[in-house]
Length: 133
Image 1 (tube, rainbow, N blue to C red):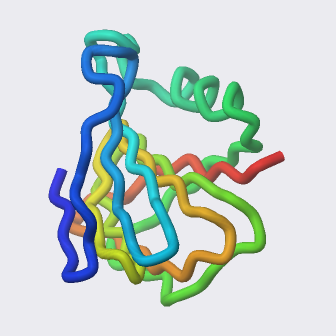
Image 2: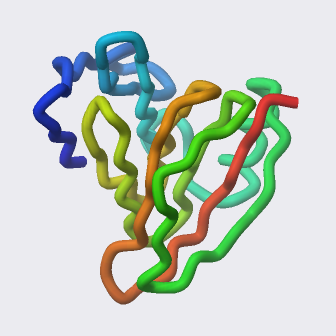
């Protein structure tokens, strides 16, 4: 998964060989975590399994489908949230950099973090939007 940006910190694997691993987008005062589903240890990716994982972390989960061309301008939320992708490609931008999320990827966005998002390509994005309960 591409990760780039001029203010981008280094990407570090975490829990190598475990149920999941992640990369970090590090900025001056914010650390954002990108998690990747590992089918070898997590099993097949499907909505029920990803939803269960997010709910086990204490999040309330909603499913959305965003058609091609969907763009969310810079905004922030008053709660910690996770944007998880079941299918399609979702470009997420933050002041720390940008990342393209694909099936099985999720980005933890701390409350108050300004970010934008855009559906890439001709396929809709099926997303699980999770907020701290």
